Length: 217
Image 1 (cartoon, rainbow, N blue to C red):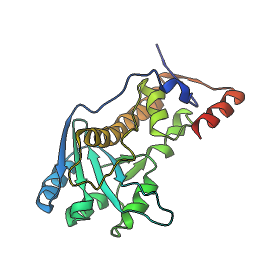
Image 2 (tube, one colour):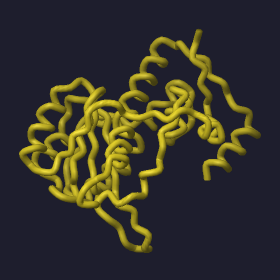
Image 3 (cartoon, rainbow, N blue to C red):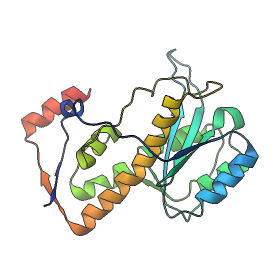
């Protein structure tokens, strides 16, 4: 039976979906020595999921630098605490690597914000938002895309927490790891569906599209 997906997923359906969580190992990186070892391992992999977190700012005209860079494989996620160690040479090496594909979502924004910490030449990055149209899907958010393709919900409750805290709590670590790992899952599924055509695309009528857009705002 072919997988049924929608060109746009109804946000109201997120509420009752089971929550998806990363179940692999999470490693905190907070020294250059740890970063070197993590990067060596990551660059030996076939594909990586990437994401960043920044401490929220509630004052107009103020901003914070990216506090966390999370990089995941299928079963391990490294959390690079940029707020503590900055953009070390090994982290720059990872970001400039041209061999291993690094999958992100809305990565142009992450890249722009990382560049505010230190300028680097981006390597092999693939943005899910730029390839999802291959299978006729118009959604751009991680939540909607994951729910559409896997029928599970990714919680965003930790997004506005303090990512510069001296110690990240377990919920923050799990949230960060899940977002990076989910990018691999989405990428591989989009590529699989595009190659096999093993899906049925349901096009939501225009009236429902308008309602969905209202719900997303």
